[in-house]
Length: 452
Image 1 (cartoon, helix red, strand yellow):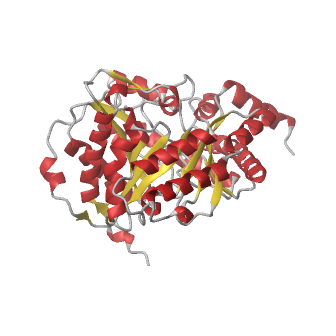
Image 2 (tube, one colour):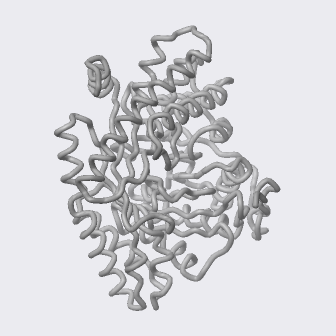
Image 3 (cartoon, helix red, strand yellow):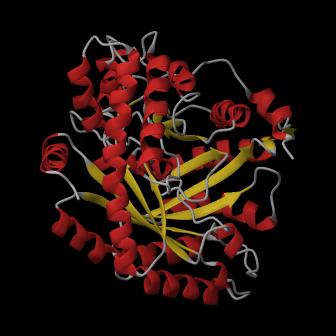
């Protein structure tokens, strides 16, 4: 039973501190949709998604109304399409993306993820076809998100795939040049991708998952920020305890919504992802949390240490609140989606190199970063390789979601709208990585990958 004080605290968190359920994501297995006939396969994909997720949006809206908890997004994730389409007799994988888009529109969700391939150790023909289709697929759909996993701690980094993805990102930006390269905002390149991530653009339904599940992603940077205002000047031990207690309350709310959605949809409860996911709204920023710890501006010396504390405390508080914590669970630092990050990057205090250092200790990686439109495919691939190396060596999930905005230069701004926000175009190093990327092959897994 909740006490009166706990109820009032939750009301304040929702009403004044931007607390919300960022997403209810239904994961759906499409393995049963495989068919040699591509048209039949697409038809099965559409039918199964619509059948499974037809009540997802109205159920989320009903919970939102009854509990008074904002649920910002309702989403779907599916089995990586490269696996589902592998048995089809076709070289054109764009129709699969269009089938996903039609199903997402019919169900009324915000996004659908899973136009994906897992190529950390090698590429099948299906993987190759899907990767080559990504630019056209993302240009011709609105709600489809794509991801490719190019490395892991166990397998190393597939540098042939990294090189290809540098080219794919570049082509995707060109195909959506009329929208500042918007297609790249729906494309993530991973190392150590997880199977139960509810957040876009990298969500997919892993092969180890059930037929369908409900995963929930919570969010609460504003709540953590307000909590830290009450411990100004106190030691970091107190800061960490404050964040842990706050994360505990946030996760409890997420678990409540997840269990309720699971029961109403007659779908197993998967996980709560307790990531602090910011928005462009003032007061809902991870960067401002770091500054509340005593930094003059996010990006200055000490930022990485502050982020490490925050990420660790969030995880510890979350696992105390729920035995079903999963996904990515930590603190996100997407530049375009965080008001404080946008300000820091615009002032020059936050650079690409500092962001890369920060990704060593936080969730995911270089996220929603705009770079000049003339950035080469080799440079993009090298950025992906650097981030994958951090994930591989540190046994954590890392990713790159980068937007080489056509026609834009350093100092310009890319407008994405909504939760995706706007991003200042950031500089990249001028030295070429062409010869490095052209080597191809495999960067071997680290020694500590040999755990069996």
